[in-house]
Every structure is written in C-alpha cells, then in structure tokens.
Amino acid sequence: MVDAVPARLIRIDAALAAAFGPPPRWLYPDPVEVLVLALLSARTRDEVALAAHRVLRMRFPRWEALLEADPAVVERLIGRTTWPDHKAQTLQEALRALHAARGRLELDFLAELGVEEATAWLRTLPGVGPKTASCVLLFSRLRLRALPVSTGHHRIAKRLGLISRRAGAEAAHSPLLAMLPPDWDNDRIEHHHWLVKRLGHDHCTDRRPRCGSCPVRALCPSRGRIRPAPEHRIRQLPLPFPTPGLRVQPGFAAGDQMESSTGPSAVLRHKRTKPSFSIETSGADVRSHGDLIRFPKQGQLGVRSPAGT
Image 1 (cartoon, rainbow, N blue to C red):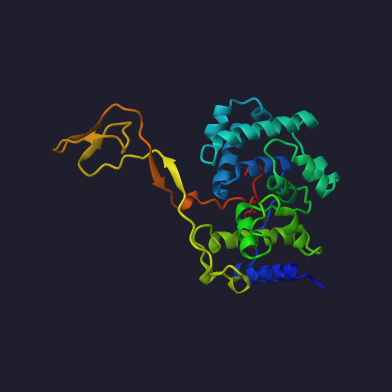
Image 2 (cartoon, rainbow, N blue to C red):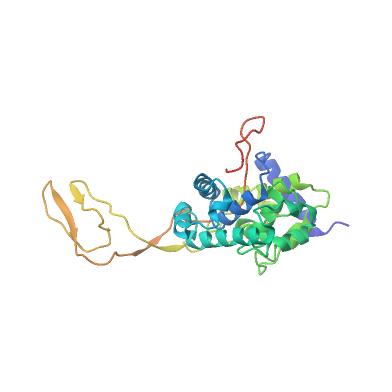
C-alpha cells in the first residue's frame, strides 16, 4: 500500500503539471560549471547568478586562472549576488580544494560512485552543502539521482505538510527524495523540481502567498492560514533624488544634512560628515527565489552555446 504522503506528493505533482505545463528543456554541462553556478546561486535569483557566471567566464576563460585571482577582483565581478565577499572566498577555496584533491578541476569521476558516496565527496569541498551537491549531481552530465531542495522548495514542503515544520533545509533532502516514486528517472525529477520552483515563484511566496490562485490549494493544509511575514529590512545607502530645478553635488547622499538656496542654479549642500545610512524597507527583489540551477536550451532543436552560461 502506498504511503499517504508520497501519494499526496504525486497528486500535487499532477496538479502542478496540469497548471504549468512542460518545463524548459535542459542542457547538462560540465559538473564544475554547475558547481560554480550553484555556489553563486545561494539566496540569489537565477538571472543574477547566471549573469555573474557569465562575467566570471569572460574574465577567467579557464577556471584554473581563478584559483590565484585577487579576491577583491572576484568580489567585484560577482557583486550583484548575495554576500559577494563570502562567495568569492568560498568559490576560490572550493576550486583550490578540488584541484588539490584531483590534480585538476574535474568532477567526472563522480559518475563511477554511488549517489551517497558522490554526495559525501562533494561535501568535503568548502562551502558545498547538500543542495549544491545535489545540483551538481542532477543538473550536470553526471546524471545521478538527486533532488536539490532550495529555500523555496523547503518552504513549500513544510506548508504542504510533506515534512515537519521543524525540519531544516539540509535535513529535508533525504525525506523528500525518498518520497519520489522509484520509477521516476532524472528527467522526471527535474520536472518535479521545476514545478515546485514555479509554484514558489508564482503563488507560494515567502511573505504574501497567493492561496486563492494556487493550483494545489485543495491539497494544502496551510491554505488561508499563513499570515504575511514582516518585510525584510536592510541597511542601504540612500541615493539622492533631486527635485526639479535643484542640482546635487557629486557624492552627496540624501540622508545628509542639507541647506538649499533658491533660484534656477540652486545647489544642495551638506556638511562634510561621514556617509549616512538609513534603514530602508526592501522591495520584492530582496526576496530569494533563485535557487534552481536552470540550463534551458535555445531554439526548437535545443541548441545552446557551450558551458559558460
């Protein structure tokens, strides 16, 4: 007899597939490429992580050149991602550890290992957790059975009652993978991952879920019970927003004390003090929903430029 939770997961998957249709087609690049992109994608939207990956590839055509690069340069290149200083350090440390262990930057040997052993080996690299390891195994040409659980996937699994609300993101990988039917191949797992990703992006958002339009609301025990979470607040350097007829001197911030004169050539002036910071309420861009590593193929034939996305 099929357990109740896996059976409900299959029903959820079917409802999502009916609502969202087929996923984009995939490209399976070199696993080192996926490792770099997965490290960049933590708490970062897909388009930002992919752009940072492309910039790194243009600056370092061979990843070996990144090993001894100036960390400040790497940080500037990936500056739009979340925590670029930490990611620049982690990225270089992970690649250095891989090069030290294998003598070169390659991960194809993992295909000869089992999923558990390959995951354990990847997690010996600095900064690599279960989600990053699963991305490397599933989305690269290694094609091993794994299920990456992103922040959004973890949130949705708890709301749908698939896992305990107290379960952490790392602890959720094994139970959620075990719930998938054993006859699902990697393509089917990728499809399921994309459906959950789409649900989190379009409906089951972090702060204000849209339960009324959710395609699986009939199967969700949390529908209508989720109170909006408070807005995230970040420290942000305010930018000047001059009014018509006023000219702002370069380097002035809107939070500084200012004195204005009148007339068409009026200039905003402020005291020469340290840059001021203010607490700003972030918009939707701060919300993280970019954990899925996607490699959609271009065109009907699925042709795409080589890895270096």
